[in-house]
Length: 90
Image (cartoon, rainbow, N blue to C red; front, top):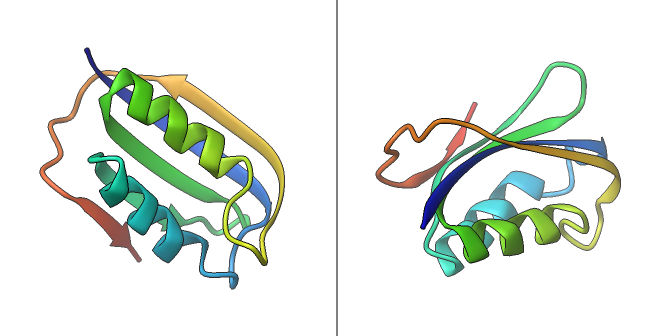
C-alpha cells in the first residue's frame, strides 16, 4: 500500500550531503517526494511510496550519510500528495 510520511531530522544534518544522499536513497527505494534544509538547522523530507520502502527510508534517516550526526527523527503519516519524482528543494 502506498503511504506518505513527513520526516523531520535534527542534529548535524546540514553541510554533510544529507539531502543528496537522501535523494539517492529515495531513488533506490523508488520513493517520490522531496528533501529540504530548514532555517533551524534541521532537514525535512516528504516521502511517498510502498509502505515497506518508506519505513526503510525512515530507518536510513536515523543514520544519514557518514558525516551526519542525527540526534532525532520525527516521522508522521500524512495525506498522499502524488509527487512524481524525489527532488532536492532549496
